[in-house]
Length: 322
Image 1 (cartoon, rainbow, N blue to C red):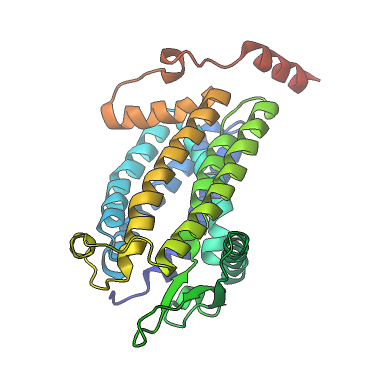
Image 2 (cartoon, rainbow, N blue to C red):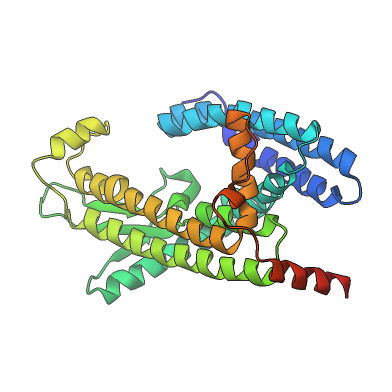
């Protein structure tokens, strides 16, 4: 445990950062020079945000991977802020994306009533799909020990054959809502300058597909965990690998950490490929990240032959002149 509640600091800080990102990118067109420094300051605060969260991920969430990613984010954010202040204006696109991502994600992350609405909605949709598949899930309030979710009607209870076992509980929490993935796509699509028709087409595929696939994912994990679909002789090895001791968690590990996460990566890559083909302007974000990592400028859209449709751009420019 940490001596202070880090989230009590990072939650309001996140809103300040999003406000700076948003204000800076809105001022970009009329006041480009001050805007660079405002957004540069936002990137600097963003670095501090990840630095504060790193020990929370390690000591509270027990996630070494998230802690390491947060630490990597510190110099990355500082470098992005430096490059933008130094004149790399293409980073305004990534900055706009971060601002929109924050506006989509932060209300559910920081406002309990919004979080409850979202989590309970996903739980209800998961229960509906389980019911359609012929199962009869028991949905109950999440226990008080999950403080951020205590009382939410989003816990699935499954009885076990063992008379001395209290039963299996599968909680739907923020990580189960796919809001983070949706926020990334919404932010990136909103950030680029492209014809509205193509942006709406990309959004119309990315967001609903992620939503539907996520309900399938939560249903699969809940049923696999609750009915112990993947219990087997390999259980002790998996438990040792993932640092767990409860044998009932084997099915959860296989369903979520192995099958679902692997398929999620495949699905997100496929969705990203469609979105990029629809909006090749998004590749400027990839080019900026590659530059930050390698120091080399590149034009990925041209390399892949995914240049924007000139007719669309002409039509867009005509509309803007009217």
